[in-house]
Length: 126
Image (cartoon, rainbow, N blue to C red; front, side, top):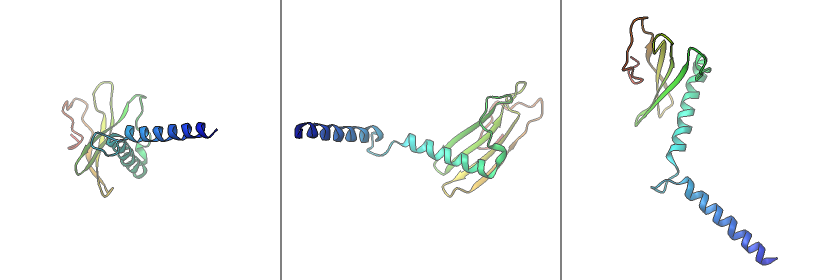
């Protein structure tokens, strides 16, 4: 009986050590992709809580609603964008959130019917 308990204990320890190595990156830190995703989701939720019209984003229902994000050293650029059938972008509203979690509105992109910007930037919102 004691021998089986020893094997079980060793197996549990090996599993714990293995799971720690899986969550660590090559630099010995916690996996940054998981942390970045969580941070991105927190920033999006912060905007949606302050701008309830964006709670329904993203959707695949026409017009499609997307959330575009870009992480920079100074914070996150986040854009809520509506795609159309006849033109690529119907509407976009762009935000920046720094480390202090203060939401800054960069601008809105509401193109005229015939205007198409193929180089839309979430940093400049045009």
